[in-house]
Every structure is written in structure tokens, then in C-alpha cells.
Length: 157
Image 1 (cartoon, rainbow, N blue to C red):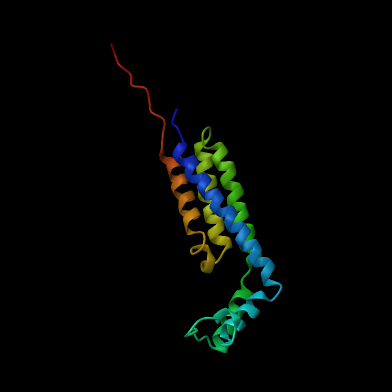
Image 2: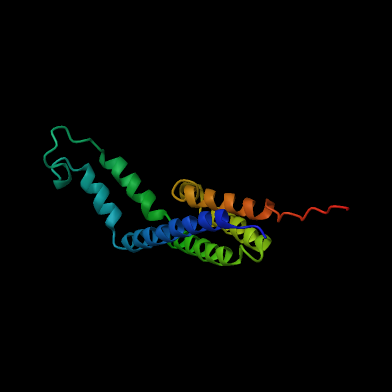
């Protein structure tokens, strides 16, 4: 019997990271509908803003740059990212439970949920924000797939 402590630890850390990502992305989704990003970036472009209070040389952000950045954040589909992160977290929970008895199934869940997240979230967020949990899931999936139980040595006496 092979102890699967490494796969479990990597899986649990990945689950925690994906669930924190789910909370973060859910909050971003809630702020998106309220015009928060437009207000925030336009406030950054204002030299007399409270954001720059006490700064001797506030960074200069043009109105055009602030508008472009605001439009970029408003176009992102945070709902899809939240759903993808939640699905990856739940698949990780199932994989951690199954890794001791069915390591191949757990490996497929780890690797499949990573692939699913990468497909559901485009490049802008798929590889930047959740890089660590995706890497942990890939390592845990490969470990669960490759590690085999030791075969008893047969002696012919």
C-alpha cells in the first residue's frame, strides 16, 4: 500500500487556493455590476483625488488609459471564472477523498479539473491568478498516476 500523503497535501493546498479564488472572483463579479471599476479608474486619473492625498508626485494616469482599463475590466466574464474555480475546487475535494483507494480516478480528476479551468477561463486570468493551484493539481495528478505500490519480492528458496 502506497501512502498518498503528498498527493493529499498538494490537493488540499490547491483546493484552498481555488476556493479563495472563487471568493475573490465572486466579489469581483459583484463589483462589476455596480460600476465600481469605472469609478475607481476614473478616480485614479484625477490629480486632486483622495487616493493621492499626501503624495508629492502622484502618478499620472490619463483619462484615456483609465477609460480603456475600466472597459477591459467591465468586459471580463467574472461569473465564468467564478464557476470554473468552484468546479475545480469541488473536483479537488473529490480527488483528495479518492486518492487513497482509486488513485487513477483521482489523477483524472486533478488533471481534468485543471484542464477544464484552463479552457473555461481565457488566458488573461487562466494562467496568471490561479497559476499556483493549477500547478499543484498537475503535480498531484501526475504523482497519483505514476506512483505504484511496491511489489513483494519473491524469493525462490
